[in-house]
Image 1 (cartoon, rainbow, N blue to C red):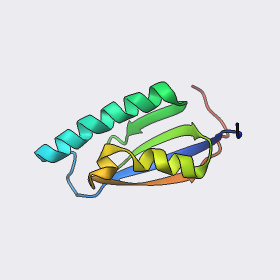
Image 2 (spheres, helix red, strand yellow; image 1 turned 90 degrees about the horizontal axis):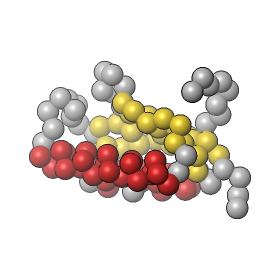
Image 3 (cartoon, helix red, strand yellow; image 1 turned 90 degrees about the vertical axis):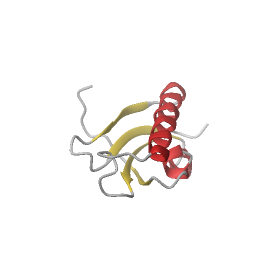
Image 4 (cartoon, one colour; image 1 turned 180 degrees about the horizontal axis):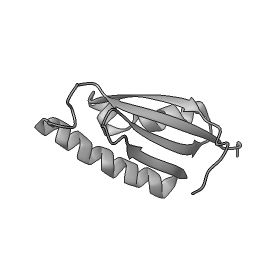
Amino acid sequence: MAEQTTFICMIRPKRPGFLEELLPEEQEAMAAHVAYLNTLVKERKFYLIGPCTDRAFGISIFEAESLEVARDLMAHDPVVQRGVMHFEVHPYYISYHNL
């Protein structure tokens, strides 16, 4: 098995005001998003997942076998597949942590 690498993902709503006033289809997408993340937490090593308190975007820091696998994980998120959010994934090095 290939050595795992750490990645950081930023996921951002496509629509301004998205989290303040969710449309019914966005509510469904967000419920599916939470379920998807719960599944990934059980299957993979996530260091953290959460939104900014100003609701600008969310981040996750996690392990994956490659950048391609990391991007694929996020591309399968229901909010991405349903066009509600878009994401960026980058390789990430944790210099310090106090978890």
